[in-house]
Image 1 (tube, protein in one colour):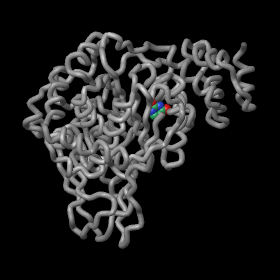
Image 2: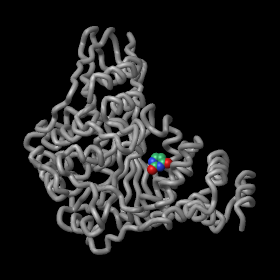
Image 3: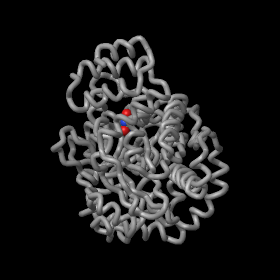
Image 4: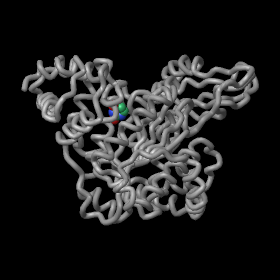
Length: 451
Ligand code: URA
């Protein structure tokens, strides 16, 4: 076997064997193949795609370069929830405590902010002393004691980091088999029994259109099926921020407020949380049958909502999930006094109210740019050493389709300093379109799929 022959084969769109794929990934991971050859390989894949079988072997080889979590000392069904990322995506902070009160075990491995999107780990670190670095024993102990943890992953699917960095530099990020294998290698190595994915589409997501989101979802479902996982996927809209509160501390504040029963203030976020929780409960309750179900089925999310919504709302009203969130924070050494006084640590340095200059309907929000602006206000790092300002962020008072008057307050911006505010304002000015008529249609979630 040699690299040249494999590259030539894929360049002419011929099917590769499991051994050839494994050879490329392992040799690249161990630095026995130079970047330029791997870049050629990834480009051929991005252009010619991979078959289902090739995608499976590609994923398998990546998994084999890292650890695989072992929760055999934790009784019960383990569920992993993951979002492909977006702006104001506060779902994990709320859905994990809710689901933990239904006795599901939730080992939640999360990441930091990436590009214009926020990261659950950064959000949790805005709680003083919250420890996101748990070792294996602490993870197992947390699951047995509290039923959930949210922490940084250990060394899972190690080759993915190296492959992703090269994809990023060579314009090969937006390839469905490469995204699917990247996400699923980490999910399979995380080794939960059930995987629930929230695939976002829209101008603030990786997948900008609905069709691509469906294709990515189907590819990930098939990978999950190959690895004998019970998996469910929701496709949800990211053509505007999900939560009207964008920012690390602001999202923690809003999660606490949601869990205190103020969920009706969070229209779209509430809908996605109810959808994720309903799908999770369905997969959990039907785990045994679904394990043997290898067909790809499409289900209407409304049917699941009809079945579980009342049950979930009752739970939130009982404040059990709020107390569970407190338990999770305390178990990871965080300051849980914020549960009673959520604005306790909110001390933004620069505050700026932004008013509409025109009258009409909010017809378009450039969610990607809004996410970038939030980063500039103080949430993103330009270099690894940069310290982020957890109090930075945006509160939006209007959403897509809302009517605004001239001079009405549209949003409040919180910045780390005046210069960052001014830089962010330049982006924000062009990120919201207000028109006489509303032409957009707000669609939250179309379908969910499960195996
Ligand atoms: N998230 C990942 O982990 N990998 C991708 O390729 C895209 C999004």
